[in-house]
Length: 164
Length: 433
Image (cartoon, rainbow over all chains, first blue to last red):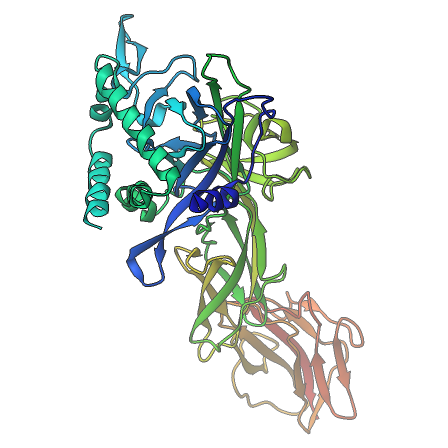
């Protein structure tokens, strides 16, 4: 418990708080940390994760969304929507989130589906249309769905992008 | 400890596997599995809160730490130089959470954001190789270089230049306009379409009508063509900058993320040095531009510029005619009172101008200079009769009776210059006493 509290307080960088609940209510806090892997001073094989304020084109960034329910009631059907930031490209297979269903959008957030069902219509030169499966680079949004977050519980959702 | 390790490995394997495979497991055709996993998570976290299952917490963190290792190759791979995002661009990530209370009532959504700034990636500029040139000894060659940024942001480049002499003394090239130059650089935030008269780049975070070092009046290269910037309008609200061009985009569309590099010229001044022997030598000049941010981002001109340095080589002959110019010889035999015509021929066998040429001749004893007899020509075959008359005391021509000296010093420029391969002929008469 103490470990959790210290971690979240230090990680919160930008936070929009919901209004305090009057009675027994769930209250989710959420924060995002940006990190990248860098070679350790000991050698190229060792790496460490460092917080990022600057990144060069081509670098891989990891966004870790930390959530915690600070209310006194379970939060249900929490849907975390994260547009792939402008200037970055989603890296396939990088989205994680324990206990979360993960869906993606390739149409700007209009519809969400698992990767294999994430299709778009391609108009062929002969006028016919053909369904194509979107590649990870074409994803515009990541969506995590958490069935329930009990009071005091929390977790981490993450994905990686490459800076364009 | 064994449990932790195994959990981490399992997680890493899942990461390395096909995402589609993992996603299939979440498709609601298998709701029982999803539910059971969810409930397992819930109970794990609950135990964590009680503080009795610290190892479970560690397992969760271990798995998160392990995941990025799979992507390590991508982290360490060099970035593509020609497709990127401009330096100083802000990339903002934003996550929004919508959720309900247990009664199904929607709670106020919460949002978190995190921003990073794109950093400069120093890149070797392009540098022209000025054409070879020829100069005279004692002058300097001015070489004009064109160089263009290929970086995603503004950078300063330090210039250096070396001249390798051949049959010449060593010289040090100089940079009259300074030995460091800043070049702007940005990237396209949207495709530059053929015929468009403006482009869009990312906003560089400073609203000063200068986009990553690119300002009105600058020259920028889009695709392979150069354009003049007529104005820079920064739009912090949309995180973009609009750069208006003096002419429409031509030669086809240029794709988003292409580098927009500023182009400038600089000059290198190379002194001739002194020819060691003979009539000419050469300096081979090689100039390098290096990023002040990263010494690895450096470009040396592809082909050294060869400066050929020529110098004049003068020779002089003197003949005399005792038959009024019919023939000239090194010596003649004639009685007193004979009128002699003296012919002094100055030849420049070099390929460079000889300037400020001055000729003088002391009239020997037993001869008397004939006033008003001086003439000159620029062709060795010109006869005395056809040569151009000189007047003592003007045009650099004189006769000094005290020192018995005929002098022709026409000054420079003008007839004081004997071009490479050229000739200056001086005539005058004397009589034998």
